[in-house]
Length: 241
Image 1 (cartoon, helix red, strand yellow):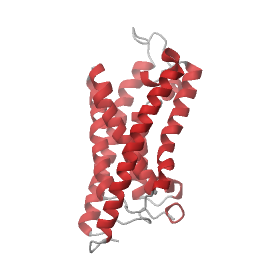
Image 2: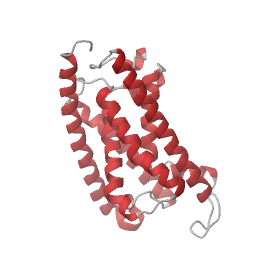
Image 3: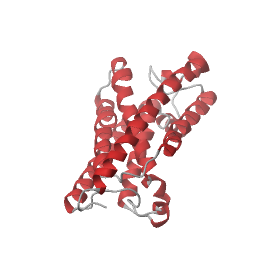
Image 4: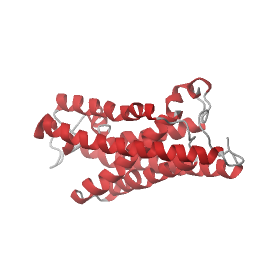
């Protein structure tokens, strides 16, 4: 198992030709650059704004409060998730074993697709970002997701996923909801209107969450089908194993 041996691709099939290895490395480096730069841009824009007094922020936050606020956004957490997956593919540290599992890789693909589509169709029409926030938004909502989806398609091992993996693929979303709703109940602050139980009630949140999770379920089933097709295609191609 990958978690024991540290082998990044111990399950499924992936191309091990020199060209494929080079392509995987290029995508990983591009993904790392996009994710780190995007998170850094958001950090540099958000932390000074929320830790100082202004018309829009009359009560400055502590460092702990700023960290809690920053990591309540799924965009930031999901992009950190991608960075850990890339790191797990480069090094054999055992504690990164979960980030090498095929179900984890496919789950990240499903959730980062949601991040991209939700931002583009729901959030983008309602916001006007400038400066570092605009740069970070483009990197985290478009560039990083597209690079990861390309990496998952051509570099991740395929052929190991089954329907039994679907509950595991949904768990990160459940964990995020527990974190955001628990934090919101304490500080009365939510990162997205669709999760704002304080303003709209838990009935509204339940409806929104059910819609989003249904979307994730659909994405996950599609990815299972693609994974099976890529696994069969890879197994039948010389130079793959």
